[in-house]
Image (cartoon, rainbow, N blue to C red; front, side):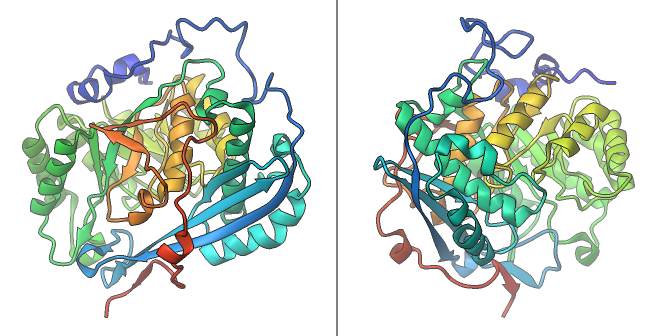
Length: 443
């Protein structure tokens, strides 16, 4: 079985360029070399005194923005007569009797944003009114229903914001239990979608070069038009990958997002090309469901010499991720704080780190989810890169009074308490909710 230590991952040319600048020096156990603590905390709130504070209200605001037609894109996983025509955000505010308000975001992929809001309003709010935010571990839902988990995730994130503000500490400092936090977080651009009248791979190459110019350390792209409709094959696809690598040069990180669309044979055929072209990782090449999923991922992982395999971005339960980690079927886990929640994601990343596995959070959503995932990333000992969605979306940065600071491929977190940001005023009037799913048939 391959050694997947961070040291070996840094051995490739592209990955060394992308990740050699991480600022926190850690020992082989993933713990900061200068850590003076007597021992690691087994929960982020261990040793953090419980404040006398209680929840008085929860408010959920649904936000939308209709994407201009020339920026609407064709999802690679469904027939090409559909367009991604709008963007949504689920903004959660939790108020307290001490005048502290916490903010958070639930996933827009949880099974319907109206249903998510309804669950918060009718189930979660009555359950937590009068409760202490420190008790989140005891009342937050931990099952595998994605809608309910996403609803709770937004609330739990707001509770973390409250706790950070009450303690006078950034959330990332509370989450960095056995390591020094990294407040300058390396990022990669995530997009590579297909638009109407797109010309592949020429448009893909031009996009990759734009992201490289911005300072991003890597670029993740999709597979193009849904293959059963476009008649794409691996033999046609690989030359496109070669053109892309030639255009961006050997030092720039490239990541292939499979979206679970490939079968085992296709994945095994693509693997040698990714190795030869020095890709960073192969994301969700096949379905993660079914009795053969773990074995299939293990076969692909063993077929790759230097490229890593990532996945489980929507996984919420520790026991399933444990199955994959114990089998050695995955190198990089990708929990999303807006789906699994900050607390559960913290457990998942620690389980991975202690096995020397890597962490790249799924983060293909709005500014509130980026805020949450950035703090988790900053506090994690085995962070690799943070995903930043580069599709057109004003809800990525216009939702804050002052947007998260992005400089030359890095998000730089401040040292203000909580998440360190404030929501912009009048969000509901600036971005009124537009009912309906974000994908619709072309007209």
